[in-house]
Structure formats: C-alpha cells, structure tokens
Amino acid sequence: MNRQFPLLTVSLPKLRSNASEITRRCRERGISVTGIIKGCTGIPEVAQAFLDGGCTDLGSSRLEQIVRCREAGVPGPYTLVRLPGMSELPDVVRWCDTSLHSELATLDALEQECVRQNKTHRVIIMADLGDLREGFWDKDEMVDVCVHVEKDLSHVELAGIGVNLGCVGSIQPTPEKMNDLLALARRVEEAIGRKLEIISGGATSSYTMVHWGTMPEGINHLRIGENILLGKDLQLEWHIEDMNYLAMDTFTLTAEVIEVKTKPSYPQGVFCMDAFGRKPTYTDYGIRRRALLVLGRADVADVEMLIPREKGITVWGASSDHCIVDVTDCDRDIQVGDTVDFSLAYCNLVYISARPDVRVVCVEE
Ligand SMILES: *Cc1c(COP(=O)(O)O)cnc(C)c1O
Image (cartoon, rainbow, N blue to C red; front, side, top):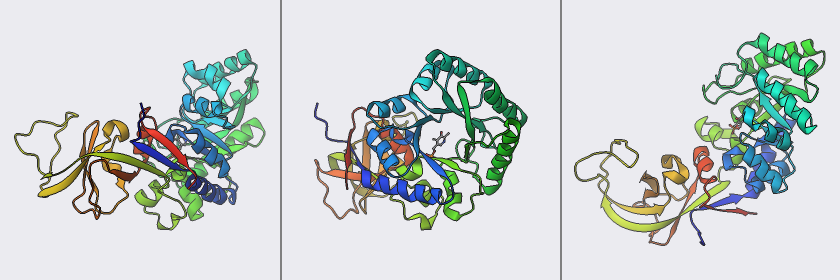
C-alpha cells in the first residue's frame, strides 16, 4: 500500500510558536504548563514541539500515547490526566511520573503497585468545583484523602491539587472558581503542614484568565492541549479577538477529489433516512457544482466542523467514507485527482490523527 491521501500535515514551527506564546505568558504569572497531547493521538513530533515551546512536561488521558512518545524518545516527564483504572496501575507506575486522582481505593492500590515496582509516583488530587466530571465533591473527604496520601503512603507523593472546568458541565473557569481552589489548597497545606508544589487551575478554558490578566495569584499550573494544538476554541468559539498571536493553521488535512459533477442540491425521490439512521432536513440551493472526496465521518466525525482553506468551498454532507463539498463559488476549476485542504476543529483532529490509514507528515514550515 502506498496511500497518499488523506494527508495530515503538521507544522512544527507553528506548534512551537503556539506553545511558546502560551508558556511565556503563563511563566510571567508563575504558571507552568503541562502540554496535553491527546488531541492529536500523541504524535511524538508534536510532543517534542510542545517541550521545545516551553511546556515543562507532557500529559495525555491515554497510556498508549505516553508509551508511544516515550518509545519515540520524547523525554517527558509524563502526567496521566484521566483517572487511572485499577487495571491500568502497573502501566501507570511503569510509564508515568504523575497522575490525577479522586479515589482513595485507587490511591491505596497505587501505593501497593509502587511497592511492587520499587518506584515512587506523584499524584494530583482533583476537586470538582461544579463541572461534574472527575474530582471530590465532598471537600472534607478530599482533605482527609490528601492527609492520608501524605502521612500513610510512602511511595505515593502528594504533588498538589487540581480542578477541571469547561468540559462535561461547560462551567466557565472564573477567578471565583480559582479562589475556591486556592482556599482548598490552603486547607490541605494546613492539614499536612507544608506547601503544595502544584495548584492546577485547569485546561485551555482556564488560560483565558492568563490572557486577560485575571488569574488569581497562587494558581501555578495549567494543563493545556487545544489552545496549543489548534488555537481555535478561544479565538473562534469564545470570540477572543486579541489572541491572534496563536496560529490556527497548525494542522492541514488534504483530501483527494474522486468525482466532480453538477447536481441538484435537494435530494430527489421519497425520503427514508441517511447512512447513520438519521433524518436530516435539506435546503434547496438549486443546481450546484459538487466534488466528492476520499474522506468521511469515520475519519473526522463532524465533517460540518471542517474549515475549508479555500474561499468558495463549503461542506455539504458526508457518510462514513465520503464527503461532498460544494465548489460552485470556488475560483479554481476543481477536477478529479485534485485535492482540497481543510483546517480542523478539535474533534476532527482527535479522529483523523487516530486513523491508521491517514498519512501524517510533520514539516518545518
Ligand atoms: C483533556 C484534558 C486537559 C486539556 O484540555 P484542553 O481543553 O485540550 O486544553 C486538561 N486536563 C484534563 C484533566 C484533561 O482531561
């Protein structure tokens, strides 16, 4: 097999630049950045670009990606940012330096595994401040567990505490939420009789407070993925206009054209359902010039979120292995065998970078 397309081109200089723009602004406020590589399935060159751009370490939700980067020679250190399953603990101790936690039983099992491997491991204990994914809801219980790690577990080191916001519950990270986390950190510090090394204020959505200069002093760590990888969520979804120091064209997806025809834009016949069992509604735009691409929902999930690089090209629809773009208003006379370029949304990148049949090329431009 000599597959050329779909092709995912990765601009390493743009990624380094995004990382350094973000880490410099964080450093000026006493914040270190763990670069989160799960959005691109842990491509090792990307991980290295994160380190080159000033990330102090790397993180992923998936062990396989951490193993992939370590085996490729990217030094880390590495943090597992999804709570480990009990069954994962041998690999967590073996491959990761730090992991996030919210369960006493897992922490005790982690201690046992560390003893077995004769290693130490660092943990960040997570608080849930309203986003309702991982973390302690009962803060008294959280303080007790921190004390337990500190006093009773000799191989598990309490590195700090953290919070995740703006994910499942869509809760905005605000200075108030950060002050809640800081108050919790002070409680833990009082209970263990020493300062915590890490007070981790969140992910890309928490970087907004660094950008605006509203991050409360004392938050000293963020875990950032999307804003380095794509720089899109805050610029396009949050409409933050003065964040244009971040490149949004870091990744380019190139797909090949296999059919170009002029057809109606409104399907003809009796409606049943589409390839995925849904009943979409269609708008009649009249007769249009359309190109069929070697690309589908199996590659990028939400094709509607792809951003065509060329003016006059719009995404019309897709099934698992085909994508149709409207090229009527495009300046170029697109032919079979030509290619079409897209910028990606986070969800597109998560899927496409995980495909074994997509060619990934990292470039120095
Ligand atoms: C994915 C993840 C991050 C990074 O999120 P981005 O929005 O990509 O910056 C940070 N922390 C945790 C716990 C995560 O799961």
